[in-house]
Picture (tube, rainbow, N blue to C red):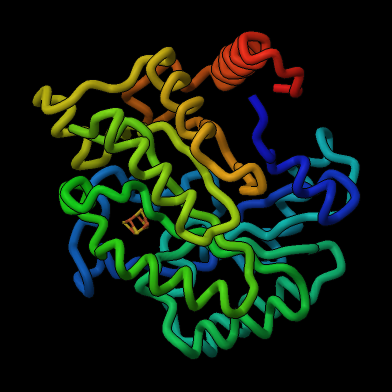
Length: 302
Ligand code: SF4
């Protein structure tokens, strides 16, 4: 089974391996502070889905230097992608965003900036800023879609309709940034048909990248309460890999697949516990890809 992996994309764009470092821009989320909702998306931890990011109170330069120190035993290159992951990274006055992102993008060691945000937090002045930044170095905008099923979107308290995502994609496409849609497999009460519906939706949405993530049940979330009540079951590894293959099959071959799994923060993860063993999960995914390729008479590398 072939998919356009992030590594392949990075090599093509930057000519070498590039390391992504998680940063914290110290922003909140309108889906938590009452502007759109209170309590946030049902699966989101108190760390705002950025549990691997440093404290937002640390100056950004220090966050970058610390991250470089931490990974120096496994990465001997000198190019990094600055990844703003925690909370909603365009939820601040544009003057704040400008100062923060320019400080990062103007560094020689940063080759691209990846900004995770909500489609309803991309007002025109923010789009203008992103366009200017993208003229300096590539900017990736990650949008947390999670599902295209409106009824699931209400259950997970996503706080916006699909139309809002579509408008944001159109605006971002106009300024030529790399857009990544984030989807979650295993959301409560979603059938295989729902999940594949989301895959088809993303495939035709105009985004150029996708992050596919298993639903993690974390113990400081409202999702955990529903899990405890037996409202839904967590996916098994076999179920996840089977769905993953079917999702990938529906994507255009030039869509960059940024992630095919993910390990939740171990101290918070309640289920599925198998996802904590990332190496085993990736091995099993690769084996399944290989099997599919052999069956289809293809010799793509998994
Ligand atoms: S939009 Fe992001 S940060 Fe905000 S509650 Fe949802 S997942 Fe968490």
